[in-house]
Length: 631
Image (cartoon, rainbow, N blue to C red; front, side, top):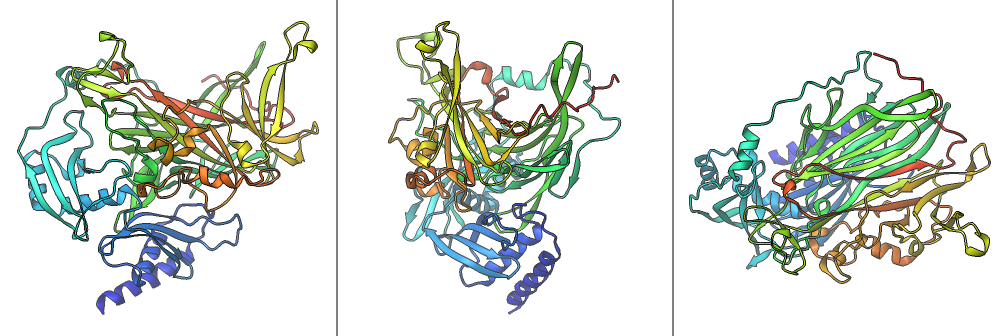
């Protein structure tokens, strides 16, 4: 009775807070009060038990209508019922709008990991084992012993797994605490056994330790300051800088997102991008001596919620950065503030334009978010330029997945293919690839858009006697099958999104061009597990009509082992794409052939793409940028 009253009081209190809040944009992340409200409403319903745990609590996507009812989408697993579920909670109405059981397995690997950590932290045997090693529990995670696409083992009706202890800030081989393992009963919420051989923590090789402990002499300070103050104006989730206006947020699954992006064209607000985010990540490994492994870091772990990463001051961003906190949640549905989740700063952008004795210096606005998924670290950047261009950039660092033993490399070439490489004594790093599916909901001067493939080629011989002429041709991607397109070095292919209802001063349709940057073919063969689970890697570009239910390139539930979800299934309908609200899905790909210089911490590797105005303006929009002043 007391518990029911407390829940009811919380629902009532949260409802009043939610009503009092002025929601700036339908895609703004959920506030702490909205998270509390959603969880309280769901717990008060008859759908879940006290052993329900939450993977992600996000904004329920809607059609693009200002009157859409704001709701929370909750993906979770009820351990006492062995039910994975998705619930949509109407926040204003305080009701469960929809409820669906999706499987008897956790729909995200994150749910299993959080349950394992919950059990470990409550077990005094495990806590004592860490204390004896002088390790704080805040430094560790639990790795669950499950191959990709594997289901949890069962003992009767209980779900069980084995867990090892991962030290997040350690260098291999000391990152996994050898000799400390657990058998976990996830259903009952207890450790069936703890195995501790009291093995010493393995240390990094001496040369690595020396370099970390005795750094080189520091360079003289590079001063970055803005004595007149920042040009960045932040109000809640909205950022205004120079001619740009946009909104930012951290989604539990997708991580850093940008929304509602406009350019002020001489007082006229012109829409460019409704929403930009990473919709899925997959990293297929290709070493013959390495286990089958193709982690889906977003769909299985959550780029915003797994590590709840904060920027490292003075290192992740320059001294003039403004840091924004984000609201997240834990597996019990309690709101959590993540400090410095987003970094926002201006930086020098090199020459903006130049001719003879006239020159202009460029300035850029950078929005950064951060994610650590066990050994890998990512920085996601959105870069806004004064000439109207937008850049998406991914920065990869962290520690490679490795195994012991001998790999084939240049020190002992024996005619074998090199699927892995020695990067340190007795350390083999496998060849692997990283694929990031960027979801780009472009609204170029509105939602009535058409996508054209732009290809350059030499003019045919009978009209090209000099042999010097080449042309650019455009073809509309009229349907989804035509929209499945690949980067072409032979034709310098790019893709232009055009609004055929708007023209610039020259009478040309206004548009923005997606200029590909980092791209690579997938080396996983058709029918392989990576291709079945993340079919978006088969092409660098996919195009779909906007749908609020199509957010994830490989489908929503990565942990359920479903094949051909997301883009391969949606595009099979071959829907019409002309003069409609289109979404571009760009597959940014990086092939990583390991080298000793990548060990133990990888130097940052950058990849990206550009969205460039093409006939969006009638002339260079940066002509009015004033000359830089001498300090």
